[in-house]
Length: 63
Image (cartoon, rainbow, N blue to C red; front, top):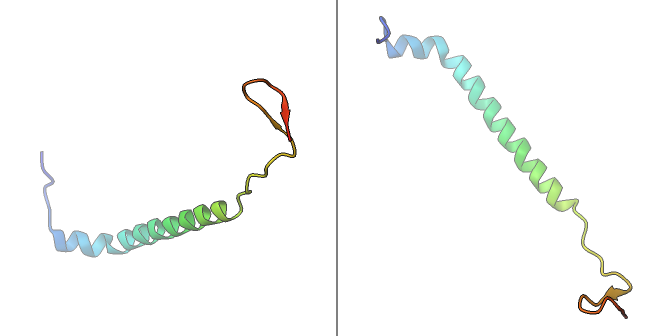
């Protein structure tokens, strides 16, 4: 079945504002997600070497 009245211009006029609003929200969400990823990468901690290391083969401490 198809829609009885499919006038693209009328539909565009009726729904143009809503579609622009949805597009704006999607762009805003993408910007927030990008900012979150950059903030997460920036605030991550750098691994620190321990004072003593354990030899994996023997289990002894290595200075």
